[in-house]
Length: 152
Length: 228
Image (cartoon, rainbow over the protein chains, first blue to last red):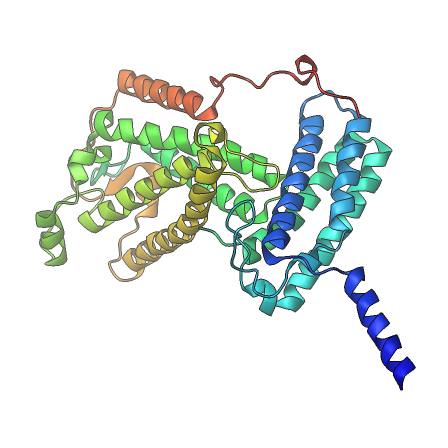
């Protein structure tokens, strides 16, 4: 009995430390940081596609950064109740994020898919293909912005 | 030529109208689809800027029925129209309200669009003039107004159907041929000089809206940053 109790206590502690609870305010900050950092990298790819001097290394750096953030499990930052609150700025997360989970899940998976594909295409160094994939990736961002981000 | 017809819409007005139809339709589609089309959405927006400015100038310098003074929807005219006592050609007072509503709404759309951003990889050409916070607000407005715009367009189309079906009047044909059946005074005015002036002003404002005059960002090579 005592052992069982101790074991479950340890299990709880391990589980707790594996995903340490983030403060709501920090969660919103991390979210905004993630999206802002991805926006920087989206812009870098775009500049390379448009500028006429395509730099493969630069594009790979940007694409892998986006891929890493996309696969980081940002969903964990959408704590209950964080549809309100201030990170770097007031959050623009719509309450629907916490209710329309199925639709949002699909959109999120689609975004992950396109981000992974972006990294693959970047590795080929094919500027036209990178441009086309950037469009698909951007459209997957927009899908979420359209339905799950507050428009002031 | 049927002698019971008169010149209603001059050629520049008609070209303006159908160009605007194409531009707004493409803007709505490209705005909804996003992706790489967002860059085209921006370019089309600049075209709409030019078209609006052209129409505003043409509304003063253009030929008879294209002039705002001709169809200004004053309360007296609207009252007369609703009482079935309005007599005139061209835009009737209610139609004039729709014309001004559409022009006003499109003006708001291009103004907000020029400073908009999509939080992905697109910023309007004048984004730097207002900064991110204001841009976010105006982008929200841009989205809201697009719904209103679709509503007004539907109303515009419904009115055309209403005129064909109920009032037995085809409004589309004169907008294509320029000729209106029946008796009336043919449009006059709006010569070459007016046209050149309207086009020149439109071009000038499009240049301003394109942000081409803004100082370009320093070239990447000129800024020293660590290479890790």
